Image (cartoon, rainbow, N blue to C red; front, side, top):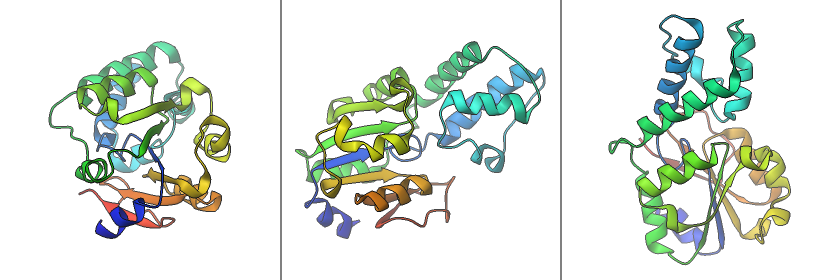
Length: 212
């Protein structure tokens, strides 16, 4: 971590994914999805870590479309996504769901860097949780990709269009390997965040942070 903290001095723009990167929220989303799937299927469902791994890093819209084919069932997607969001927010607001310590090390050392959220998560949920965890004001802007109707790939490739950041002065903090690889290929500094869901599954990073 000390080496990374020293390296950050050379960069101006820090982009953070949310789930699994800023906080260990994936377990909450797994519970929320299990809750909604139980309602959809009319029986108790508890997704395992391996089953849920398929859906990590995707938008709710994509995940619920996959549920229709994976479970051979039809349902009102909009209403079920809304239920999932409410359940996720309820779980994430628990005081035991905490921001990872490494983030506070960074903002303490570099309070004047420009910080951004870049997430596939719902915009209002992001705002609600960031405010509840008292870090909302740290971020210059929150980029909710569903609200922008963009994939993370398209956003990163067009980073200089959506922000005044430059590739060579930007860092991406991310827990999904394909996004880390893209960041490296584009010239960003790529920082992998390893959590309990992606342990030993990240390879394309310049630095690795272990959160467990």
